[in-house]
Image (cartoon, rainbow, N blue to C red; front, side, top):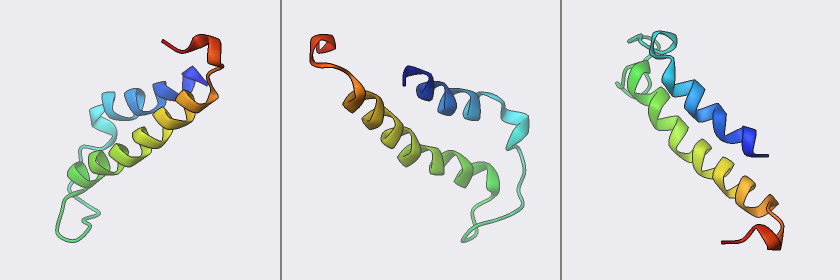
Length: 59
């Protein structure tokens, strides 16, 4: 499950993948809304990893 946390890291690390202005969404270039979409996705992934831990792994 910890490998899920690499998805946002890789998805946002490789800037040439999303360095475009089109397609625009509500007037925002792709560059901005792509990064903003990762915020809730990352939150969900962190929640899933947290919930998958066993009680003995708790801090």
